[in-house]
Length: 192
Image 1 (cartoon, one colour):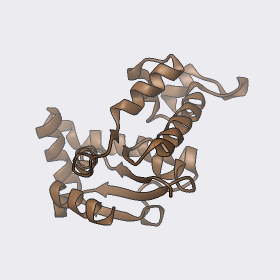
Image 2 (cartoon, one colour):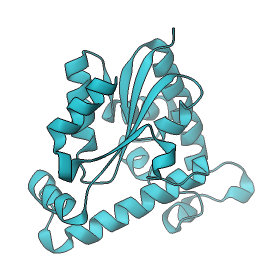
Image 3 (cartoon, one colour):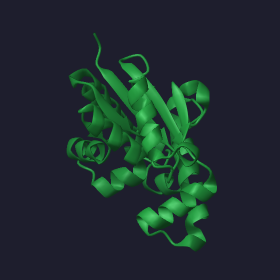
Image 4 (spheres, one colour):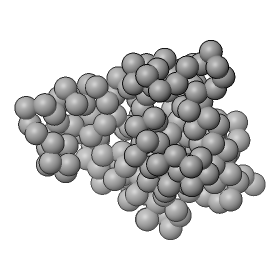
């Protein structure tokens, strides 16, 4: 039998990372989030901060095009995608786990018994949460949310050719603003 994997894609500020860690802890399985960035850094030789940023910029975007040119072969982002793909695939083979972000839902779609979750919430809930949790300035919180979500959606579309956040791509979508983070975690555990 294949390992059971939970992938959590999420809007910025919706609490998806917190939900993923809670689910993993309560199920007694590993959760991979920052650990993925560390593993990609180790395998690629790029810094963790570069990988964190590159994971939200598509080849051809303003930031990435300043540093890469596809006409000369794969970009740094393309190389990181291949490494990320391999690491996530290997983690799914090694054992049951929760994987947060990094297009894991797409990568594992045919490779694992996978519960694909998308966590979202309205702008007000997410803005209040990033001000409270991350110390974001209230005046720019909503703009930061829009920018971050726009980059995540573009990255997802570029590498998967699918629409990020589209309910058809996931087993379940959860509104953390309506349900609360604890209830979302409980629902995922019940579906696991």
